[in-house]
Length: 342
Image 1 (tube, rainbow, N blue to C red):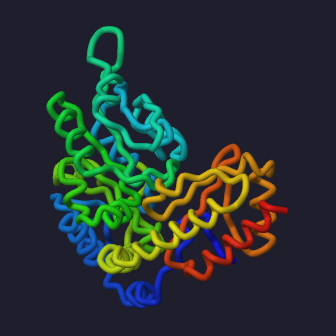
Image 2: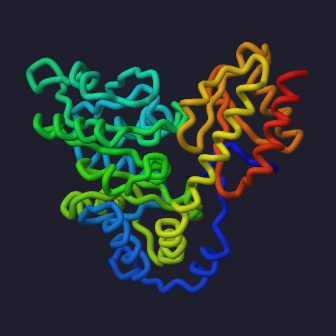
């Protein structure tokens, strides 16, 4: 199968498997797992922050990021198709006790002007806005990337008003690759950032929440409340260290393969795609004008050895990663063209 559903389907490399087998471990709840301690310290260093805490999932890391920056009964601003809005089981409400106030955009990129218009002041009639959440890259808008200056201005303006900023950076290394800047430069002014190790970076599990020391200490306690306190988890941290230090260098190949897919898909009659918006490893295209049904197309593609899913209505998404080669992408495009043209 040529699996283009998501970069979550990547499998750990042989180097990761060897590191996991030989990992030095201890009880992480007691802070005694040396491999996990190295991973968290290394993540803080790479991101230019004071501390980091590992979580088994990105959803947990985002939930902690929202929780430690807010109180019950407050509002969080995010983009209308943000992952925390569409795909994380309303944890902002269920666990954090906060309302998400969303902003529609054309490309998933919020600006301060749009945010400012949605701010709610503290007072007798409404819940105050206390947190701005950004997503970089933006999944449901096709992996779009925030300019560093845009994030900087949002953070400056938010902080001037006493607001915090959390960045869902599940694919932040894709953004850094596209911009050709260090991740520390992108996240310099945000209060907390989540990064996923198990998407394009290939670790079998795990995300990290990164921020200042006091915030991460609080997040570690909240992680326990969510059942995220684990024991000899250095086995997973060993793979995470390789993901963090070695795998980002491979992301440019994923981006080139995504661009190839976008260009080939744009040639298929009836398919709508803006090739210039394909900046990273996510390709979203619309098959409405082909007259085909996305579910039926997905089923036929799978029958022929390619997995590409719909993401709502007539939109479909292909995500490149290191387990699919350029030849795989070319073959997938040929099959997709045949399915949509016949």
